[in-house]
Image 1 (tube, rainbow, N blue to C red):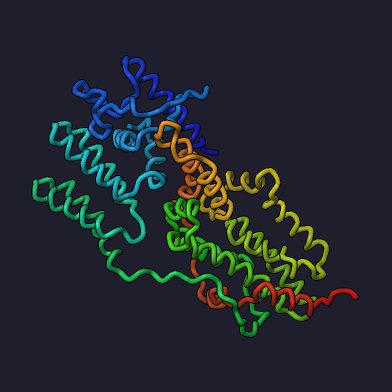
Image 2 (cartoon, rainbow, N blue to C red):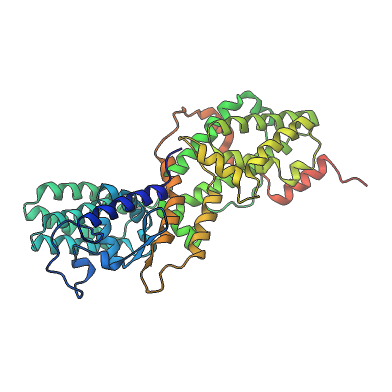
Length: 434
């Protein structure tokens, strides 16, 4: 397993602290002279912002636990190779304490301020952080941000800074193009369905691993569309409007689950139902092999629901299902699933329900600020450690080929019964005793 971000952080901060100690100074975001600064100099105008930051020695090293917003920005802008974990954590979580618009304003101010003072390195550092912030703007960016950044492109080009001006322009054009495109339609929450008649035998025309591949490709496409800010927004507000791609992903989980249980119950004869039940067990086996925990757990929830579970199934089928169920055992905070996810190598599609639960717990269970009003960055480290799993799995894609025949068979998973109708169907297949 790779070393965890937190462990990396501790070793890097410790190394940085030792270097600063040998220089006879405090932790600093820049090696440039700061003799012209005093206690009244705002953090955004400083080269050394260590007095605005809070560190703690936890026995393993020196850890950044908080700081003034402007100081955190300066610290990120001046991050060296030994500070890259903090740099990534800042970019992942800054939206929890400052808006993208305000961050861009502060970076533009710092870039111009230090260019005027002749501190080329500090000016460039602010600009390069600005480029990364712009690069990671997601969704439909606010018009005022687009206008401000295009003015900055114009200023750079007019001043003869053609290289950096063209870089910023290249990052801005896709954002502007996306702004003027019509909003991508987002599927609405699952409405009650009136299923058309199934052709139950169709599922037996396809191999289980081919069905699992197509389920995985659909999940992978939806997973790739999710942006990290959507997960942060959900942890704080649980708003579908602020997390459209995340909503699509979670709704597809629900659809797959209800479609699966409806399909199993569509068979009238017990022997046909058993054959279908076994088919789904085989599909789950391949999903687990593909590290597709999302569809794996969607089908598991279908086969373990009351409407399906109450029917008569061969014991060895139930034993196999019980083995799968152990993965999502809620005891010890889902230890088995967390261990499996930690061992999984990309490509992988995690079950986002637990990730959203963890993010929400951190957001609601920790203060945004320290006692002195500084940003509580320990909370941001916790969020970063959770979200880094999502980021890591988004980097590697599956190489399966799309199969349109199977996609048509799935039909968008829109053909399913609701909870009440499922149980009514189950009672028809197996009436209550007495």
